[in-house]
Length: 135
Image (cartoon, rainbow, N blue to C red; front, side):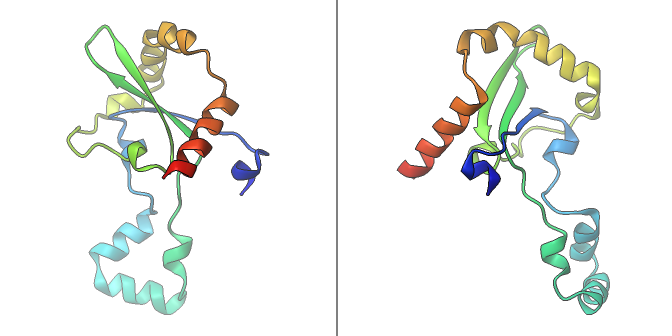
């Protein structure tokens, strides 16, 4: 709601194969409930709306860093809730991509590309709103 009103802006930076950013949009409790029917029944008995409470949605503009070669990276910008921003199932998660060094290295590799785009976060939100109107 605050994003739609223009009162809140959020930029999520994610390495493409960072396992944390590839996780499902549910909590560990919800994953456990899906794997164990008995646990699901127990959680449901304790709290009828636990499923809604255990689900979250990524927000903001996602700046996804993709490695194209060892020495280069590519950037992809999407709104976090769009189908284009969903995890690529063909890519294998790499725990090393969750480390600060991997993020710093990839950001340095795309610095020139980002500087050439010269786009503000508000402009990215504006282009997201325009694409929503055409969908």
